[in-house]
Length: 255
Image (cartoon, rainbow, N blue to C red; front, side, top):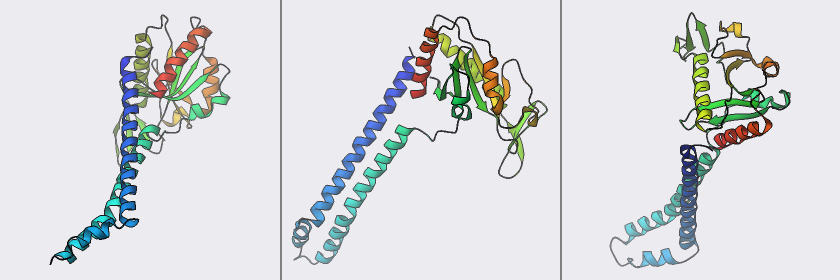
């Protein structure tokens, strides 16, 4: 089972969407009712005539007409914004393109892919592939035109054309792998699941000067199917256990 934090976050998101939907629908309803009262009934004319004997009648009449015309529009606009916010929250942020998930049909038989899973600590793990090997995930290396590997560190190109220090994507993938491994251990599956952090790119690894490391691999995108096929099956992962891990990952993907 997932941790309580994951469930709480999903429940809170549902409550936020529900609250914004109800509020948005309410404001739209108020705007429509107000518009009907103003344009389909003589209510406004009567309200203006109540002060027709006053010297301020022209000013009060103008204010009443302006308020009557703008109020329904404001209510409807406010409701529409609330509904749009609810829809955006329901969809979540724009989902980035996941190249390995997109090539799912080209992967070896018995592989299951998810575009993104969200750990309880807020960490997003992209392009997760579950199979007899265990769990692998693939983080995309930045384009060579915008990033470069210099000596022992990485640099990113900014809008001014200058290069500045940036996070090492291989080290980030290794940390994400450790976090995913710890999470799978924390759910008490009763067995160990191997986790393979990988960084990938459409460019050859040599374009970055990045080498394979013990904690993280660099695999060209075109070679991903073959690389997955080369992984040794984990003997402790039966079909039942793989299905159990799949349920956990699917729950993380929905969180």
